[in-house]
Image (cartoon, rainbow, N blue to C red; front, top):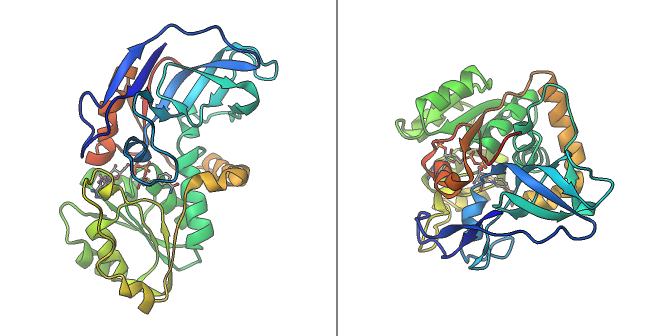
Length: 334
Ligand code: NDP
């Protein structure tokens, strides 16, 4: 087997030597277990949180342990009759390894939907799609005519949020880090407008693109972008707090919004959420997303890097913004 071990807590950006790829013999497969070969490893901003010792929603990965992560795999050996060899599964919270042994009873078997590529099970039909769906529907509560602003808009979660918002009749404005991403958002994903935060004055652009103020801020970034959005929230606005990616590499604490008082004045409902809490409701979210996908109302992109050896270096794509859509590393053939 090949397994990425966490050797050091990264300081700032992930560096060479923080993780180490180790080749190991595998013990014989235990009773009721399945041996799953990783096809795709999903890379997520939260991987960086798990490497640090911050007080997160899951314990940090202990030093000298395999790195936590999951994706899509195929069963290559099985001691559990209900999950035979050849079954495709979501490997959930397993490890950055070529093979993971998983209790057969806990396997999350992927449905087979004709015409839907496997990568969709990390995107619209996977955890990032569910994050978009439940964060927007449960906390954002979109209504016809609402103005919805989405940060990290061309990423896995953001691209889904905006499209679900459009389906619910919102005026959707995305914020992203390149002209190509902005073009994709308006021309492919159907956003009403997109703002390139690297070249535009985001406040002035929001004033132009959101003439009626902002009813929903789906927040994934934090920092200055969050401040300029908060400054433009309407009365009784909603703010699903999904992520704060601009702060995950910080070494010395991360400031909150500088205009916190505006959340009081505007009577904003702000709620942080973690998608794991919605696990029991995934069938509901997946059914909705699958329906829209089949109807062609949801577009998605995947950014796939080849080779297990490139997993740690590829994580950086999320922080430089190199990825359009869901980032994954392909370890082997489908
Ligand atoms: P994405 O596919 O959106 O990739 C991350 C994107 O963030 C990059 O492409 C980049 O795009 C943008 N970004 C990175 N650094 C900055 C920065 N300093 N300022 C502005 N934008 C930045 O990742 P995901 O869709 O997987 O995750 C998006 C967010 O959702 C993250 O905050 C993540 O932690 C959160 N999340 C939360 C979950 C939950 O349960 N609460 C579950 C899943 C994700 P650009 O080119 O636009 O800069």
